[in-house]
Length: 112
Image (cartoon, rainbow, N blue to C red; front, side):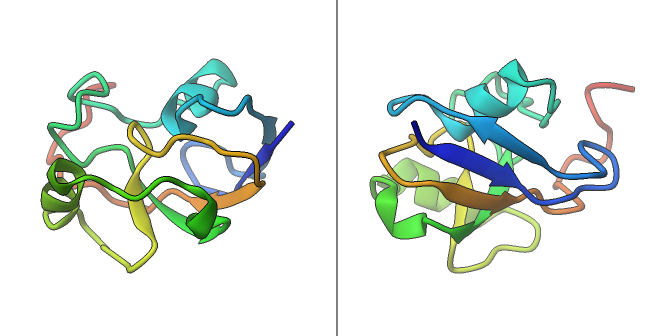
């Protein structure tokens, strides 16, 4: 069973987390199921960038982003070559190490 290592994030998981994931699940769903409340303002429909992550290890094990995801990522704060939308990044057979950027393009969080 692959694992997702979530690097420490001040608001979401200050100590970081190691999560078990099943192949075929999205990174976003695994995080949410394990109490990491990553923003997903569009309800995981690939219509925003609030669930933006940076895949520090295991990026090549993910399926390639489609054109819609690539277009959305162009709007993400802190975009890097290994950026993905966690709602679209489907876990394969390899472990992943992910970082949630400190900011999103949302001016106001849905949680406040």
